Image (cartoon, rainbow, N blue to C red; front, top):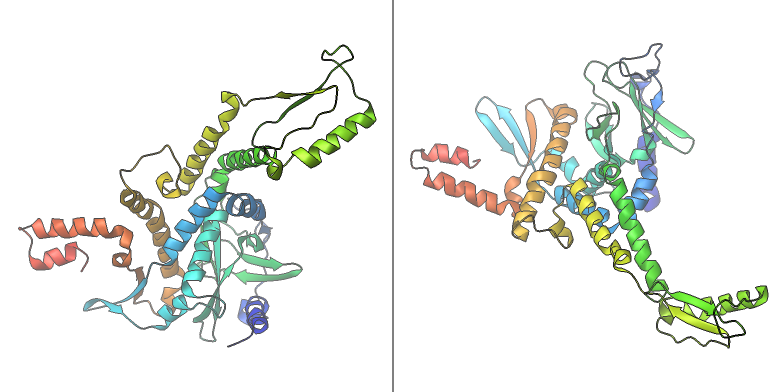
Length: 401
């Protein structure tokens, strides 16, 4: 088993090794394309991937759970490989393509690799895969690249000139074939109506709701740290016993320091106040309007779930009953969110990777292995069973056999 150091060296070596001479093609251009980008220049996305990751995936529980649920679900869909020949479409059980998808590199297994790709696509709107090829041009390892380290090198028209991967001061460029669009880098992106080179992040679409949800959580935390109430006011009595007295600067600082030390924080919640002469405590209650932040937080949580395509019931968000039961909600998650994402990725792999092993191969995935789709399969079987006007062969085709 190789050591961690050797694995890291292998990954970096794959990315920053000296490319073969056929790949050393300069990136240059002296014209503006119809896409208003200067060909030959690296175009960064202009979006802060670190901020998306921190405020969305790391700090927001709704966005984190949505991304994890979608990415992990898609990562555990089994692959199927078919060979198309004159006699029809035949499934291939063992093949080098299936091996590389099940173990893409020494650092990751197949499920972890796919979960990383899907999570990158959800957080950034973009995902990148680097294929390390042998001398015959066949991929032998696949690596997921962090989106914030990759930039598109603008080209003329819709095809980029290449991709630039940068870590610190080390830069590696990857060429894109202008005719076929093939490259050692696969760029998977979501649709963006205003950007020709980069996809739109789901976190970007939910940015306002994520900010509201995070602020509501911070508000709630502040209440807990202050005794779960909006505290109150210390009132200084004057010499006549009425309000309107004053404290000296020294007295004010001493009272404030003692109050912060002895009566602030969740560990001091409910602790009685010891007030000296001339000081009175006036309790402040929370108005219904101030309490509305709870409803605001739940509303923001539903908007976040909506942006990612996750039914709110699956995230434990109260006040939403779009589906009659959890089974319907899970089925909607798979049919409307996860399967379209897997379809998109499968299509990209067929166009970018599969043909390198032979034009007769086609990659698909095993729908029957997905337990959440059992109601849909059962309904299809019942329709086929009740269709008396169909032959047995037609019924088998109807259910996907």
